[in-house]
Every structure is written in C-alpha cells, then in structure tokens.
Amino acid sequence: MQKILLFTFLLVLPLGVFSQNFIQGRLLDSVSNTPIVFASIVLKGSSKGVISNEDGSFRIPADHKSENSTLIISSMGYESLSVLMKDLSDEGLNTIYLIPKTIELQEATVVGYSDNSLARRIVRKAVRAIPRNFSKEPFSLVGYYRDYQQDKGEYLNLNESIVEVQDKGFRKKDANTTKYRIYRLVKNQDFPRDSISSLSYDYENHNKTVKRGYLPSYHGNELVILRVHDAIRNYNIGSYSFIENMKRDLLDNHEFEMGNDVYLDGKWLYTVNFETLKRDVLAQGQMIVSKKDFSIYGLDYAAYQLHGARERNDLDESDASQLIFQIQSEYRPFQEKMYLNYLSFSNSFTVRLPPSFMLDNVEVDSTNKVIWFDFNNAVNVSSAMDKEHYELYFKEREVPFEILTGHGEDKKVLIKPLFASEREQIAYYESLKTADHSNTMVYKIKGLIDVYGNMLGHSEEKDYLQYREFFTQRIIQGDYTGNGVPMDTGKPLFDNVVRAESIDLLQKYWMNTPLKEEVKLPE
Image (cartoon, rainbow, N blue to C red):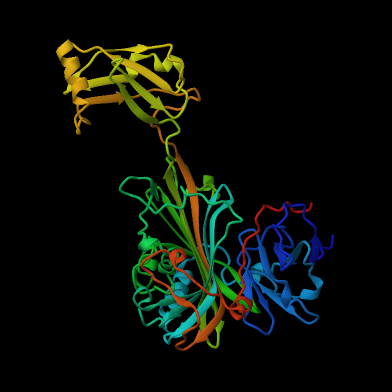
C-alpha cells in the first residue's frame, strides 16, 4: 500500500489547544508510524526553525506562511524532506511522514558486533578531534529553552524561554566563562502547575531526591544544569557518571561495538554503541561520528536502575522509577565547525508527598480536665478507641488515660488523663498558665488510621521525570551581545525578569510549545 507523505486531520480537542496564529505539525516514520523525535524543521533561506518534541509534534507561526515558503525537515536516519507551507493547514494537525534511509547489510561499516577494536579507534579519534572540529573561538547560540516535569506522560510546570548562550569557545571552561542573555520568559499556564514536583532538591530531609544519584542544585537554575551535562562541550573536565572526564575516562569505562551506519543530509555516518554494567546500574550510549573528519554529530547516554535480580532484557525504559538519567545531544556543521543543534537532559526524581492524615491541633480543656486531639480527616472509630495508639507523658512519667466517646465530632479524639494524684493533676494544669509549657506533657500517637485507611503521618513517595531542553535557532560566530537581559546564574532562570519583549525578537525566534493533549493517530 502506498503511503501518503503529508496529510491533515482535524482534532476534537478543548478550545484553546490550537491557536489560529500557529501551524501545528507532527512527524512520523512512514514505515513504523512512530513519532520522530528531535528532527530539525527549518524555514528555507533563514535561521528560523524548531526541533520536534518527544511525540514528534512541532508548531511554527502561521504568519510565515506564503506562496513560496518552504520547510526543510531533516533527522538522523531519514531522507530530508521539503514541504511548502501553503500545503499545510492552520486549522488542524498536519501529519508529515519521513522515509527512513537504511543501509544495506553488505554496505555497512562492520558486519556484526564481534570486533570492537574499530569502534574504540573511532571513539578515540572523535574525542581527540574535538579541539579541531569544534569552535575554539567565541560564538553565541540563540534558541528555545524549556524545562518541565512529567507525571505519567502529562506535562507539569512547563517553563519556556528564548535565551542567548554566549560561549567563549571550547578552549575555555564553559561553567566559568559562558554568559547568558534572556529574550523572553513564559511560565506556561495552559499546563498544570504542581508545587510539589517543582520544589528544589532536598537531600537533607529526603523530600525530593534522585534515588541513585546526586544532582547539585546550581542555585535552582535548570539551564545551567543542562549545560553542565553536555559531555562534548565539557569533554576535558568532569561530566556525568560513567562518562566522567570524556577525554580520559570514556574508553576505560565502557565496552564498545559498531552499529549500522546512519544517514543525515546526504552523508553516511559511523554509529558506535557502548555500555557498562556496574552493580545494579546499566548505562548505555551511542555516538554518531563523521567518516570524513571524525566530528561528533550525536552523543546519547542513559543510565537505568536494575532492581534486584532483574535482567537487562526486562528493562522498561518508560518506567520513571528505573530511569536514573538520560542525555541526548546533536551537533551539526556550520561554516566548517560543529555547533550544538539540541541538548536534552532528563532524570527521574522522587518526592515525599505530604501525609494524607495528620494531627492538626492539640487543645487542653482545663475546666473539664480533658485533651482534644484534632485531626484533618475523620478518624476510624475502632482505631480511635484503641488505647495502644496513644501514649501520654508528664515530666517524663507515663500518664494513664481513658478515651471518651460521644463527643460527636468525627475529626476529634477526646482523652482524659488519669494522674496518679490530685497534686500532679493540679501541677499539670497550672503549668499551662506559664509562658513555656511545651515540654510539660508529651503526646505520642502512632498507628492511628482515618476512615479512608490512611495511617497518621505516613508519607507516600511518587516518581516524576524532570526535563531540560535547548534547541538552537541561530548561530553567531565571534563575540556578540544581543538585546536580551543578562541572566543571573545565582538564581533560577525563571526568577529573572524580562520587562520588555520587542516585536522583532518575537518574530525572529520561535517558541515550540508541545501539544497539550495526546493525539490519537488514525489507523
């Protein structure tokens, strides 16, 4: 059956998902019908462009649509495609199919994976060639940046920006010399905002942590965190686990094998796969390398937690609790040097949710000589009447008590202390009149449950994924200072303030907000 390479279908989605000001598209593999991730969609004859999202989606401003406007679409492993914008609808989702370009087995660089010596030589040459193939002179990258969390595929806390990265060149240390300017900031309110998952990492109290790793906060600036995890840019200093110092440690820490060559823009490139297994962590990577000058076009890397006796074949890459981190990067040539095309860094993290059942207040009724325990939920009656759940201490001595019923308030438990003597009872209630009586009576409550089955003070854990992504739209060689606001790296990117956004900047650079809802593909 012949496949149509381009078609449009209308969506029945909530009002506001699609703006009349944008053309929405989605890229799919013409054979497998799967989304094509991180493909470049560029307006021919300009630097304007976007990179497709993880579901293959993209959006571009409709005001660029004209009789002769053409989009050039390219992706690793696919034939490049030219699409006239006049053929795209601005009223629905345009689905565009790319044709995979596969190499015949006999044309492959290496048949099979038995000999890894060639793979190691290619990686060694590629790393050694970085100072030659990547710019040692100053340059700037202007592009679209975003960070967000995901909860079972749903976008949370989506923040978007147009930023300029002022890089002093590969001979300089990125963290020490790179500056940033902000052109635009958007805290997207069309997607849910979740205050729990957006908290800063808290290893001291274990409220938000990476279970199998440690991620410094870098003052909460996710853009700086993203840049730190570009192992190519930081090839001669410490990077993420297993890659370490790429110049020195990559070859020693991994086993290598050749993959099939991959196609991009009329060239066949080497593919080298590598992995390491240390204790119960499996790390896998892939490097895409030029056959001509050993330029690195791509470096992808991921580490997974293998639980217990689980084999690597049982790995579920979509399970947030198994993924530790993943880095995906692509570089492309521009005026004889390689420059970043996109960089994505994601990691799993775990947050401790607030307890569902909590003690709200303790109130002492001095007149009736009773103590009220006030909870946020209705208490299970049987649990409330079980004396094993309570302990009372006065001046470090345990105090017997009785639980009273019939008070008619299902969120309260009424307890009457039974002091050993009237003197002790008087001493306790007199102590309540003093300024500091917090230590006179100690209450311990454990094992109590509410009517929903929640245990008092018990916190559940929840796994999320955190993403940070940068997509280059313009490369400027030499020193350059744009019109944006200097970014303060000592605080989160989106705590900075951009007071004015020029119309020119909004037209020159494109935001590529992901689709708000999952789109069901036609059969």
